[in-house]
Length: 100
Image 1: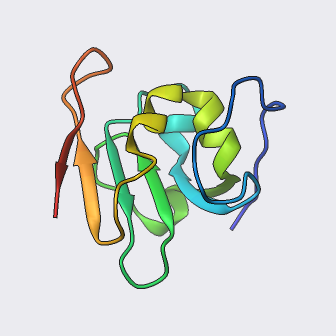
Image 2 (image 1 turned 135 degrees about the vertical axis):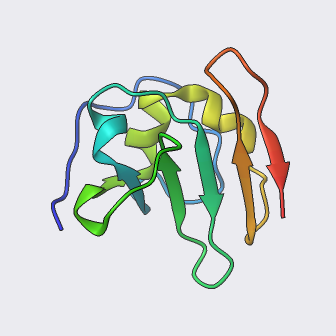
């Protein structure tokens, strides 16, 4: 699996997790598709930031949490989302809907 970094942090970081916490994004998000699905895994606390499409393992990329935040700072609204929950939205103008 490849590790990517795009740019330095430019915004105030809202998460309790460390900025260099590894998280998953899909390759589509790195290709500037919007983040429409976020999960906070129950077992290991891993964050996933995806475009909302179906994916294969080869679509997964690992980035630092601050990189995902810099891609779309609206994920900061989910900073307190508990493990085992996920959030979806229809588009970048839509509100996040959090579910268990």
